[in-house]
Length: 418
Image (cartoon, rainbow, N blue to C red; front, side, top):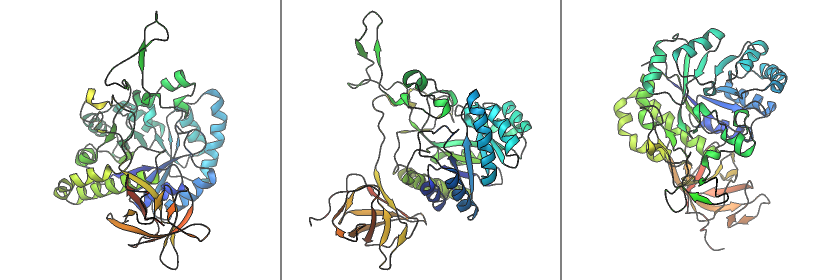
């Protein structure tokens, strides 16, 4: 077991989520700009927003890594050089790349920044890790297909100063290390350049060539089968094994997820890591509570992926591509007014009389009733049906800026009749 505590690394699709991740325990976040990242369909950060997020992080002793991990084509290279020169000015803590050409451009145009090698580079052995170390990489992200035994062997064969980053939670890609051709073939959008349409989540049938137009379902149930639909990775019950393998950074997947997802995953993994390092018996005693809490953000059924050997048929979901969602995100408290009401932009509908849950920054959850809602025009209302409306809400329990409000799905929109 390494002496340095592992980093908890969260995804952030915008400034709100970046701040949320830090409020709830992340040590670092990874973000994408408006080009050269593999989540081009996400909102992503402008350079000005990146600079603001980096300043916010550094003021709190946190870190920000910027992704530039597409597999580049010829016409990407000149613009990539310009982009790296821009990153040099705003000084993130590292740039994450997968393409050797972009790696060399980053070395040339922002030499003071750390370089991390993305999982997209298929990093499956210690020889590959040593290669990237000799090129100047500080950290390499393991391929998704590695077991803990293989990761421990890599740790034993690379310099102590070299860092290993590994995905421990989130969606799994059916393609090897995420190098997918399905999206390009079926939708004309290149997953390896940030435009994935997620065809792995679609439902498929069989068509025999002499009977065109006649579709024969591949039956798992009456709705057909989802052939490529993996369960989500979750290693919350295996923190000691991850630490023992010598992993330096525990990475959460999900740059297109909400602030609620960031808050839940950051808080649960922060608590689990800290409990494990402080008192392994405490960690073991809290396993059920970790699992219950991690289930309160949107997810599919969970798997441990490749960590304990090759996945079997139980790792796939055959009857549906829908997410499980036990709780609904209502908003993040931005300020308190002079009367102590929570001010925020609401994300989903709720009503006076609904029971909400305040995700406290200390790790606890507090139930509160909605006593009063005042809309952006200063009018008291019974319901808040408009997304992103600025509200002032009086709750039966206190909340502070930075805390998230959520409610159990199915309990909302039942406010008192006005």
